[in-house]
Image (cartoon, rainbow, N blue to C red; front, side, top):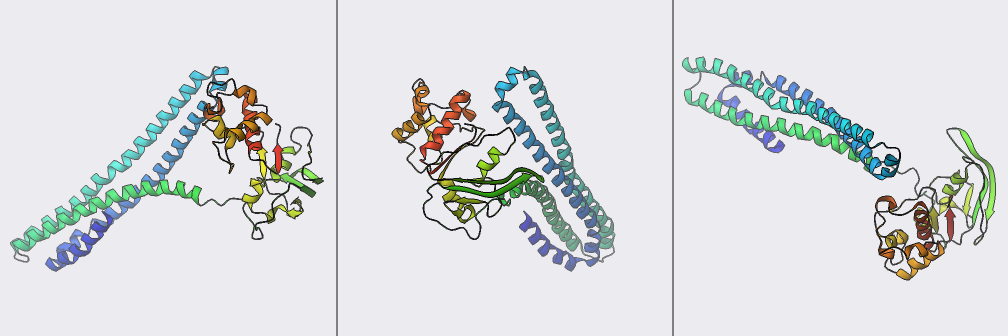
Length: 364
């Protein structure tokens, strides 16, 4: 549409000027109004459609939270309250869409009005000119026909502007995700290192959030194969220390070493492939138990021996034997069909399955 409209204007305007400069200039009088209308309505459509997309995202997030937390909702008898809130959000969404439709629907009638105004001017001036012989009847008829063809493309251009504004609003949200740079990435000095053996060392590590220190002056060395436990009150920085090792958080430069080398000298992929990590919050995928245990490993996910061995080490095997489909049992959204203990042991089995050089258990 856009190319056709521009091409039609480029061809038609010279022809109209050739037929009658006066009529063509008169025809152009409403064009500033057309441009202002398209610009104003286009901006309004863009702003409103962007807000509607954001609001729809909020509705989707609310629904997802209620589905994931359905047990909590039921336990606190919040079903009716959540249903009422969801209905309110949908009504608000419908209202916002109706406001958008008003602007979208106004564009074409306004364009027709201003273009029709141009027609009235042309007829009011052109007919007397034809009567006076300043323009032939054939030229005047040709002028009207060319004008009609050009008007159709102007209307089509307004339709394209409508679609364009909707598209750019969606693209802006999409690009915000694609263009986000990860805060933790490979440093320029990172290169493939010898195989990681599992030695970890913190050297005078101090770190905090929002200017408030969480850990201060920590120096600790853990040899390969050695077991260490971090014990402390809630909020004392235990999880923070553990998150430094796979670089889920970046420790200050020169404070974390793996096998005697700065952790930042390892490519992230090499470092993390050597680590089995079980976070505080267990996350399971809506897949089979075997697929969840084998997730993130280069080993064959169909290898039941390795999966069973990992489950045995994690203390999960006895529970699995009671499942109808055993390791092919679907665990549901976020592992909803499993108990809390079973979910945690599945996460431990997943970490063990990859046979890591470093095994991290955070409150597991």
